[in-house]
Amino acid sequence: MAGINEPLNRKLRMALIGGGGNAFIGRVHAIAAQLDNRAELVAGALSSDPQRAQQAAPEFGIAPARAYSSAAKLITAESQLPEDERVDFVSIATPNHTHFEIARQALDAGFHVVCDKPMTISLDDAEELVKRVEETGRVFAVTHNYTGYPMIRQAREMIAAGELGRIIAARATYVQGWLWSLLPDVVPKRGVWKADPNKAGSGSLGDIGTHAYNLLRYATGLTPVDLSCLMQSYHPLRELDDYGHAAIRFENGASGLVTFSQVTHGRLNDLRIEIDGTKGSISWAQEQPNELFVRSLGQPLRVYERNPMAPYTNELGRAASRIPGGHPEAFFEAFANIYRAAFDDMISVANGATVNSRETIYPSVHDGREGVLFVQQCQASSANDAAWVQF
Image (cartoon, rainbow, N blue to C red; front, side):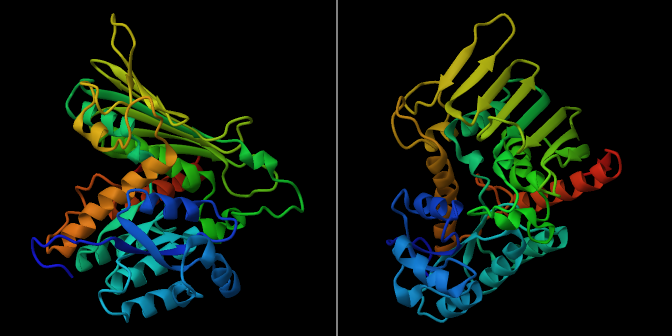
């Protein structure tokens, strides 16, 4: 470990758990973590199947000696290596029900953690991870990657600075249509576990609804009081929820609405957010991520383009940009911004500092816990005819 005030003059060493084979998100983790040349992927347990784990390793540039057959074996073996060889952090890209045990083992072994959402499938497990992070002082980031987009960072700082006035309402919608491609007796190439209640914990709510909720919370900073949720399952081959609405009441009197669907025909990855204030409103769409629309009564529509050189770009928006305006940045860069901010904290910890996990620019273990609570309370409300439940 580096000494106080001593820079960490090397790349951080990464281990990837899950994400091999046909998985989409594992490759995203590997690319995003290494995008800024601050980390290198050196170890992995890429599948729960030992043979597939070994076969996938060369595709990620992992040497055979550090291609492990399970997460437990990776964590045990890496923790026994000398400090100048072992990994610094573990990235978890596995099915939801496995997150807790892998994260717990990694934290107990002294590793930092980057974990997919939802962080766990039970609130008790989420609270246990919060406790472990506080006890170990390790960095824990949750990949709600949409918070990494420059224009979302721009919006967050504008709202915090009062440019929209008092926030009175916020709406986040995340709609897809891919579930209609599921056919009887056809096994999907990836994500089969998402149809299993014991492994996924929830359907579209946990898969994309948590993203929409987290984005709303991240941009506005509003604190929820209670919610009312109505969910449905329309696809004949899925017993888990695939459509829902959650109405939210916030401490300052503002109202919120989160809508999620994976049965909306023709939609690909349509995540949108709209925020209303007493002085103006903003809107942003993930499929057109480099533009932020700002409106005020009696004034022309303002379109803030992602441009780090523009005078209207604030510090958060500028810091999240890598290339000049007019050169689109998107999904990988936003994902990489989660990693970049987490790396800053990992280096601070290596230099002897203490990181306040409640004040990170990236989604932390506390945001992960809140996402699990959101899922739990939505399920409780929907099961009780959309009754209001406390947050």
